[in-house]
Length: 551
Image (tube, helix red, strand yellow):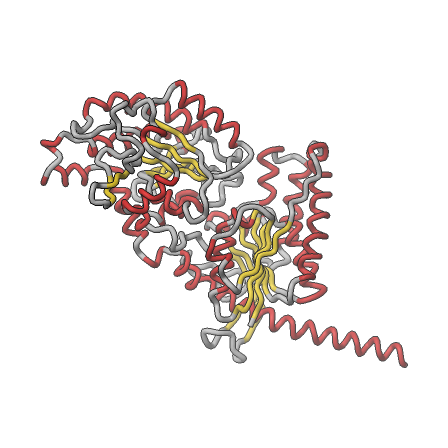
């Protein structure tokens, strides 16, 4: 039985992929204990906290003050040294572990600590989970020629080549790492004669680089492989039912009088009637969806510089004008006109700035659109995603190589996505199939494959949806209604995504079991083999010292 460590130099509670890794590792019979290491902050998911196999080890972030931040290289060195010592102390306090999975970025202090501990103490096997490139985080702020960027890139290249297992979130990233970082430096081929590591297994060094015929092929040897993110089981279209929506929206007080005060008339139902912006409670106590329910646009963000919310700001201004003009087609039986609630959840450095901008925009310019920025509990987050008509992703990536996991959450909930264009995005979002791709403000007309801007896509999708929703009674019945629904572009996208979401093969659990479980078994075997030689060399060293001392 083996002990696995999952390590991220970030808030563990806000690192979903690493939490998913920890949970999947704990589900393996070969793993007796999982230690999840990360910074203090948000609490982890219930499935992590309640799992007896998983133990959390939280660290306090190192803050050197604002003065040293003005000298980026010195700040990086001092902070790195502090983290290195803290991690070595923490690793020493853990029970003996066999494998460690490290998130990158950032990984340099963590990787160096794990390498030192592996070389000197336990011979553990290290795997890097590449979410992005660490040096690109500095590069975005300081430029490619800054000294701290060049040093960071050099160290990242040298240290990551000392490990023999690598995972990537995209094929674009894998190709870049092979070309620029020359990964993998070495590989070990494991011949497993059974589903578990047996005594008949053998390990040989592989000199040549092996090309994978399919992106789903996972090597049985140390090297670099693509493991795309997939949504876990808690993200499901089933959360979009009327009862779940009603409970969540009522809990958040998302009612017309609170969210759309400019539209709600004095004759609107009082709060004693349980009526949210999408649902209502009937006289018999059952919950139903409103025919004039508001549509929700959902976005999750860490409020950093690689997500440009000014794109959404401009789009909402134009969309509000179009919605105001739609009032003439509103359903006579409805109480409220077409309206949209934009829900943006997350925490980050630029949140306060954008909250002020959005509050001013809503106060002065918006009538049919409202914006809310709640922080949701882990159990409520999947439910909120499932209430949306469309997801918005403004993630552009500092490297252009990673893929935003928030999009997978939306797909898992049966929600199509409008996402800003960048290099690797086409691996995830298929324009016109499971979402739409819109151009960024830096895209040239020749480089966007015919993509429109965000406001054009939103207006096209949402006005089409509202025209169907607010059809006149005479055309919203029988065959005409079905035809109108089939012609609704957003409905088609949602149906495609929903069908895939209900397929169990698209889930994290299935994907991890098919790909990662074999890789983890190989890592365990590699550790056993390496540990045997390590102990043998220690024995020879002791014999040599005894011989020198006595003879």
